[in-house]
Image 1 (cartoon, rainbow, N blue to C red):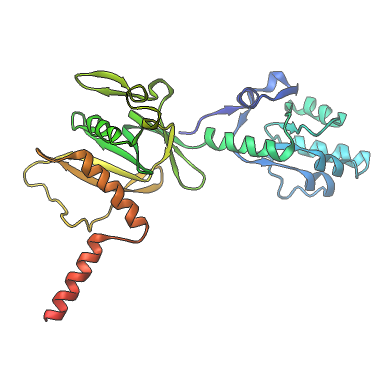
Image 2 (cartoon, one colour):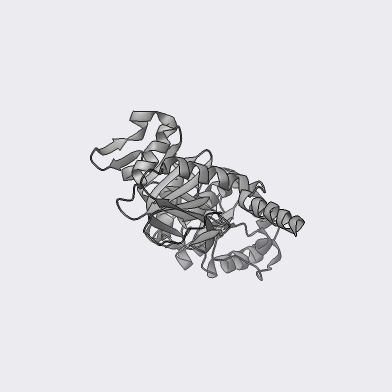
Length: 310
């Protein structure tokens, strides 16, 4: 689910000054990119005008604006506003804003904002802010950990031992991202960023003990605020007759958003050290990313040996 971001959110979070249109700050932003309409201003070429984006005006755009006649200025600025973009933002290096922009803002009820930052710096800031805020999000039940640089989402039914396993891994020097409730954000590059709800940051619930703060108990290294999701480990309580892939040749994935994330099932049985198994699963995933797959290598060696024997 994507959040709704208004111009008011933008003004508040990026500390922008409202030059016109306080009453229109409830307008919705739907695109995380910005547009610099210099081509449209100078050449009257609107074929590829990105009107759904925030329009950023810097000194380059204004220099092009002053190179055309007054009549052209009025016509082209009117076209910019008539396409109904969310807002216009003038960068910090703009000292004087032409009156025609305010005239059109009043005509089309579109706010005009000002940033203290220079054009490139502001575009970087607003793009980063919107890419997070407008990204697809969801919350899942589980424990998120950073195990030797690998972001692991630990899943399983209640009372299967997720938090206890995570606690043992934190004792070994790994870091907690979130316990019980994990927030996921789908990034533009196809990655998944995980974090904890603000209310439960650094906290874990251990049945029989209660709520603990991992930073207070184990130090700053025991917590990280965000981490890329790399693999899912599901703890499954073993029942008689369950089919288990003993070699590890079957590579499972879990679909999160529209992204297939590698998944490993670890069966919970008496005497098994779950923390060690999860740790090894993360290490094995890392090796696979470097091209090493022990299960496949073993089968290949076995096939060669059998072929030789034949």
